[in-house]
Length: 173
Ligand SMILES: CC(C)(COP(=O)(O)OP(=O)(O)OC[C@H]1O[C@@H](n2cnc3c(N)ncnc32)[C@H](O)[C@@H]1OP(=O)(O)O)[C@@H](O)C(=O)NCCC(=O)NCCS
Image (cartoon, rainbow, N blue to C red; front, side, top):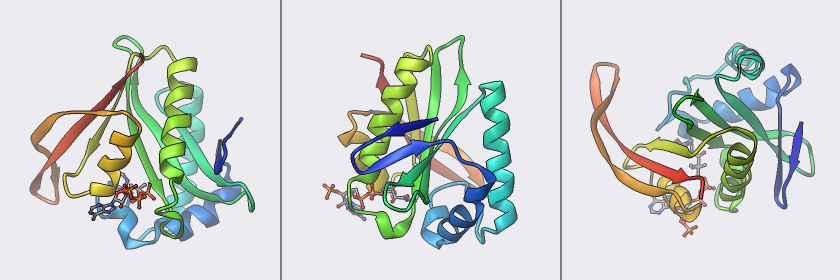
């Protein structure tokens, strides 16, 4: 399964991608505003890819690797989690390897991925939770025509501390 883009492709990951995922996820900045563990090991990558393969079978979540067109290496991930077929919504998540920031790659990945999800899965709403200080992330969402719906106060408890999250959403039409 591969979706061809201008700057990158989106494709399913296999265990052969564990090395590149572990290499890029090891950067501290990747975990700063996400639930991605730090430090990040090869075993974390193997467990993550195995989960992606299982989720694909059960359709609880959908995960695509972001593929460098020149090297075919995985340089990021984009996911739709908590897919709810009854209420027709799902939660967007993503990360991009640091050497590729600032090139418009994640904007293209979000546009390709949300287009695919709205076409192929019966969804009317894709939403994302973003740390208010993760400016790059919410700017990208706004460029991809997501709308900020509000601030979820004390939404997450991490290591005993409460954190707020913006909620952004994009509707099918
Ligand atoms: C979120 C992420 C994918 C964005 O990467 P990117 O698409 O390459 O983003 P950019 O570096 O192009 O930044 C996007 C925009 O935010 C701006 N920006 C970035 N950091 C900023 C800051 N601290 N203050 C103000 N603006 C900032 C950039 O200038 C850019 O705006 P522009 O396109 O108008 O010039 C990347 O930072 C990442 O993978 N982070 C770690 C994982 C993560 O946080 N995932 C999201 C969880 S919700």
